[in-house]
Structures are given as C-alpha cells and as structure tokens.
Length: 305
Ligand code: AMP
Ligand code: MG
Ligand code: MG
Image (cartoon, rainbow, N blue to C red):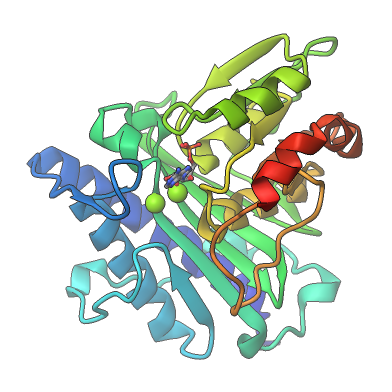
C-alpha cells in the first residue's frame, strides 16, 4: 500500500525542519549574522533566515515538485549544497496511521507555508529560546498539518533542539500538551511589535497576566505547554507563514487559531500573505467565541481600515 502524500510531506518536513534548525545554530556560532532590514527595523532577515529557507524549500520541492511552497524569504536559489538537502522521511512519524479523510489528497492540492526562522528580532538579540522553524501544510485553504522545531530547546537528557508536530485528526507529537491553570486568564503576546491597538485589545480581555515573547511559533507553544490560555495580537503584522503551522498544531490538540473576529484564515496558494485581522489563539478549555466576542468593535474596525 502506498503511503499517503500528507504523511510523506509531514515526515519530510519533520526532518527538514531539524536540519534548518541546525543551520540556524551554525550561523549563530560563526557569529556573522548578515542582518538586512526588509521593510524597516521591524522586519529583519539574517543569513540564518536565508539559508534555512533554502534548505527547506530545496528539500521539499525536490521530493514534491507539484506542491506549491511559499516561504517568507521569497524565491530562493535552490541550487543548494548537498549537506542541506534532506531526502529521508521521518520514520517514527510514518508509523502513525493517516487520518481517513486525508488519505487521498493529491499533491496539487497541498500548499506548504514556510517560516524558516520565526522570531528573527529575538534571534539577533540573543533570546534564542524564542526562535522556531515553522513548516505548515495546508490542503486547499485549510491548515491541516504543522511542524515546529525549536533549535535552542534544552532537553532534559542534555541534547539541544526539539520537534513538535500536529496533524488534524491524528493529534500532536513531540510534546505532551498541558492546560494552563483554571481561574486565570494568562495572555501571551508580542514583545517586539507592541502598538496602542495591540494594548487596547489586551486590556479589553482583562487578563490576570500578560506574557511578552517573540514569534508566533513560540507563543503557540506556550499554549501547548500550559503557560498561557490565549495568544492575542491586534496587528496586521503576522503573515500566513507565521500562523499556518502553529494553527495546525494547536488545532490538532483541540485549540483554535483565527483572526480577531474569530474567522479562520485561508491558506490557499493565491491569498495575500498578511494576516490583516490579527491573531487570536485559544486552548481547548477556553471558549474561543467568547473571547472573540470581547474584542472591541473599534479594534476590529481599525484593523479593517
Ligand atoms: P511577534 O509576536 O512580534 O514576535 O511577531 C510574530 C511574527 O509576526 C514574527 O514573524 C514577526 O516578524 C511578524 N510580525 C509581527 N508584527 C510585525 C510587523 N509590524 N512587521 C513585520 N513583521 C511583524
Ligand atoms: Mg515569523
Ligand atoms: Mg521568519
């Protein structure tokens, strides 16, 4: 019996994300980050972003030439060193059973959204634990699977880095999700892109605590680690590659990630990249629609305009 495409794409993404993570560590170790401002000081790119993206897109497109792959760093030179080309699919992942409804999806129906290094500001500032590699797998317009690799996560056995994956209908791997404490409302949000509008939305939700960390990937991991109940970001600054993998991983656990109006983003190949209506993510125990209902109309209107 042939292995379903979704399982193969996820299995290759798992191994490729780890290789991209090791490239990110290598660039930091060499010490010359090659920082470039893309659209000003709020939007940086380093040698690590560029090289990690080349590794991911070259590896995935070689094995899955008919899959549409969209990376944050634009068109990459795919003529990459052999040592950056990953061709082995993750064997442990392939031992899982493919969800019935995903078995027959054709290669042409996949869209893969790649953020080779999420949390670049934090990377350049040495806040390395905030950094993640994000590979999101969409089928037509839905985020279905995701891989989040943390290149600087310290394992209890002393090794460095960990991979977390999620596939809707199958569940999550690489983490045992925990639920944040009852009776509190801990919100995680941006540390480097705070604006008055972001603050206004936070205030309206009466959090008991606000945690400020970098990256969309790291914030969603805080939900899975039981450190926060919700991720709230009233800004058009995130893009589809920031949320595709985190949405799939969170929703594979039973949580929800949408815009601030409570509507899922489309991850179809032809959509605009910006998540104009912000980000709202909640753990399974929280009513997502209740929280969305508390976001002030003025905040939604400001994002719409
Ligand atoms: P943050 O929560 O601020 O760490 O942002 C999460 C992701 O969205 C990161 O990839 C950021 O680079 C991106 N992002 C958020 N706000 C902006 C912005 N104003 N300009 C550019 N990128 C942004
Ligand atoms: Mg990002
Ligand atoms: Mg990035």
